Length: 260
Image 1: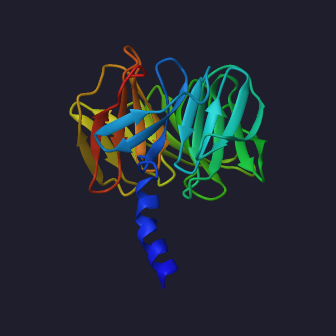
Image 2: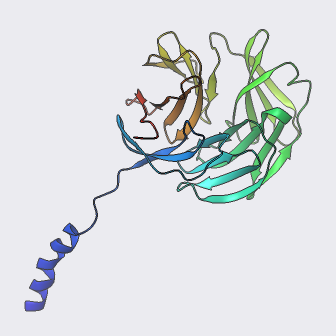
Image 3: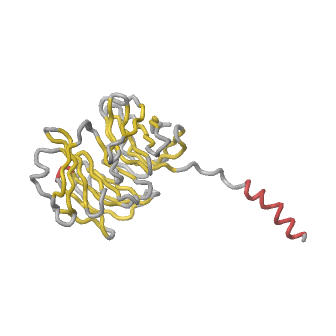
């Protein structure tokens, strides 16, 4: 009995000696110095972690996995930011798409008009019809349906969603996106994220929408930073913002600077 009592009373002491519980990790961002940093905290109270990679051209995270692009490599990373797979890649911007489960799915290298599909632990190139992408700018890609890739294209007559069959590169549909302006981000759910005069719009595939009040900078870009979170980057000042998309918790927040 005595041994049991000693064990019982010493347990709380051991528990109290443990380090404080770490704040939850929301995801990763590409900071103003083009380093990759984890973002910790709760909505409205954020902390940026130490840099885990430098020389980042583009980065995107689903909460489960991420894509990381430098001037010479393209990598898939896990939720801790550790490299799972990597290959050589040309310098230049890239767009990324995840599956609905958050798994890596698609990469589009804009300077070379190259679409890569992540399959069985490696990247495989997908054939594309060059005429489909002639005189257009690709704004976003997404893996909305199994076996298909969705592109948001900016043409002279506005924005279009174009879907192709991954097995053949054949165009299966083209839909004009009326009332939507660039920049725009398409998620695996089919949701479209874009800005208007009053803030950010989340437009569902059924055309219903949710508005998030925000004062947006004149020039900005979107990137996925975690599960239910979007990074908005001021392209002039490099100020970073976080957009919470989870239903009932939609909000726009400023992120701390690197030196904070």
